[in-house]
Length: 182
Image (cartoon, rainbow, N blue to C red; front, side, top):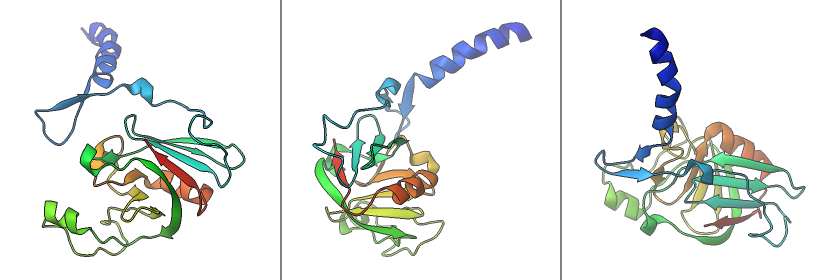
């Protein structure tokens, strides 16, 4: 019996990891194409790597970074909860902050009245340890202390990374880095 269980385990694990992802409502599932999380080339999206480039792929829930020197990094990310919270297009990093504070927008507080008006930096702060502000108001690339959010539709518009990944990206990406959300 033990040998049979060992032989079946890889098949069960394979079926589990490639099946569905359940988000928000237990009754709704979303098919995920794991193969969409792959390396990309920067040329189809950017004309140069001046100041570096970040591509946030909402569908594959991946953030791609190319440095001005061509160094490449790929990170899993959280993405907006719904299409109406998603902004797509070109922007850039305009500010960076270690230990960001958080002030939810009026629309966030309307959707969830239990949100605080302000939250200082720390373990409960949803922006994690580092934040990079885009030139679109209230849109950021930031960390998260809640690691369950990565790889899911879980944000109110921002792109979230594991704290260790945002710390790494924060050190690489400069103010002026071009960003494309698609």
